[in-house]
Structures are given as C-alpha cells and as structure tokens.
Figure 1 (cartoon, rainbow, N blue to C red):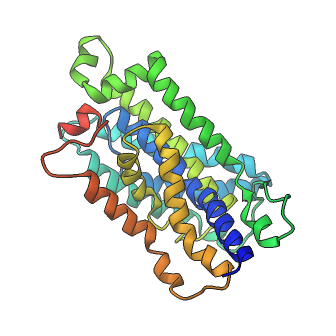
Figure 2 (tube, helix red, strand yellow):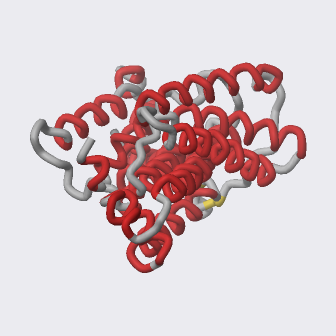
Length: 305
C-alpha cells in the first residue's frame, strides 16, 4: 500500500467510527440512564427501529430533518415509557417485557413504515471536516453527523448530572438501593419510569442517525441488532456516560473497517469484516461477565437480580 492509501484508510476508519458509531453512542447513553435507575431495557432494539421509522416519516412529511429528529425522540420516549410502566406491575420481569417491547416496536415500525421504503426524505446537513484535503475519498469520510457533537456534549452532561445534581442522585439511589429511596419517601417506580422514558428519548436520536444521515434511508433491516449491542456497550463502559463515547467509537471503528478497506481497493474478506462488531460484543461479554463476580460500577439493584 502506498502512503496515500494508508492515509485514506486511516481517515476512512476514523470517519467511519464517527459515522457508524453515532447510533451506538445514543443507544448506549439511553441504556446507561435506564440501568442507572436499576432497570434493564432490552426493548431498545425496538425503540431504535421505531424511532428510525418515525424520524424518516417525520422528515418526509414535514420536509424538515430536524422535525424528524423530534419525532424520533418522541417515539423512543413513548415506547420506553410503556416498558417502564409495565415493569412497575407485580410479577413483571424486566427482561421478558423488554423482549416483548422489542417485538412490538419492530412490528409497528415494519407495518407503519411500509409506505416509506421507496420515498426520499430530507437529510441532516453534514459537518464538513475534510476541506483541508483535495482527496474526494477523505472529504467524503470526514462528513460528520451533526448529532455526534450533541451526543458527546450529552455524555458529559449526564456524567455531571449523575454526580452533582439532585435528579442524578435520585436516579442513582433508585438503582443502587430501592429500599433506601423508599425509606426517604421517594417513588422508586416513578423514578424508574422517568429514567426509562428519558433513556428511550436519547436512544431515539440513534434511530434518527440511521435514517436521516447514514445510511439515510428507511428499510426493515436498518438496525442490525445495534439496540441489543448497546447492553454490552454499557457493561464495557462500566455505566459511565463518558466511557460510552469511547465504546461507541470502538464499535463504530470496528464496523467501518470493511468499507474503509474497500475504499482503498481491498475487497477480499469484506463480508468477514462485517461480523467484527458482533465478535467484539461476545468478547466484551465474556471478559466482563464472570460467574460469581460483579462487574465494576454495576448498579446495586441490577447486581442483586
């Protein structure tokens, strides 16, 4: 490989990490909020797919990509709030309910989104970071999703809120010791419903990334399991929003390796590289979840289940 090809490959992977990692970032932040309150939401895959469809539909009908983003946030919050409400009922299991909501969300998205498969919707404007280069490949690789900076700021804001605000303390208390929260007169169910809905709203931004930027269209295979991978991402990040940024970039870079190699003319094993994020997920779960040991940073209520 020539020096130009190596530079193009490196930039393509870095740009791909930002582009492909954007949905991972928002879904992992959403799951982080939910799990900090002591609840698991495996239905985030359904949230992601439904919000992706809502984003595309809102953008298509209104002509504004930003209205599509708001529609995605609303759809994600509503479906996640349903999960939160159901999980407050007696003898209802978080995991089973999450799986049911995942099926509900994907089913609704496929049914309601059938008319949206062919049309084109307004897309989010890219942030151009490749103007310094005359290479079209580098310029294309450094077209950044405008939601990515928002996600990074959101991660920092969540970290600060969990550490320094009353609302953050209540969420952490509900996740670490529901008994202590009840003893102080707080409604653990109410806190968890609010945190689950907020997590779904943030995850909805990940759906908007899929249909309003990259790949920028609606189809029934848009998610590819990214909502489920978010659970592994949160474990890898040790329930720290700042580390969710690093985890999302890592998974995004892993998913960008195949297209980056293809951009410099290396097509051998292209489909093999597409499985890298899933292999990485399994490796993280094996390394992080050992029998008899609690993952560092795990909320106490999750550890007791």
